[in-house]
Amino acid sequence: MSITNKDVQHVAKLARLNLSTEEEQMFTEQLNAILQYAEKLNELDTDGVEPTTHVLPVSNVMREDVERESLPIEKVMANAPDEEDGQFKVPAVLE
Image: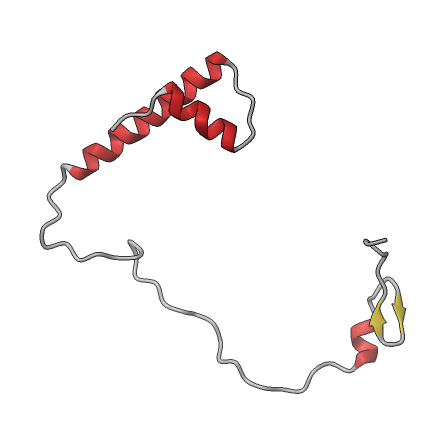
């Protein structure tokens, strides 16, 4: 499988990118180099190798989710730049 200039032009159009001829050529070469490397990986003998999601053993290191009392509203609002009726006041972003 190889990428053509036409493929690059099609993807650029979908992404609404205006590419110069030189950029199209450069991306075509780069994408083909990536595909060639992926083809080399297909040549590897992976029989007997179990599929993994990560190369290192990873475990969840998060603490237990334990219900506890929340901070009092006075402490929460102590560092708020602006506050109104116990709520953070922020500038309007919608008209």
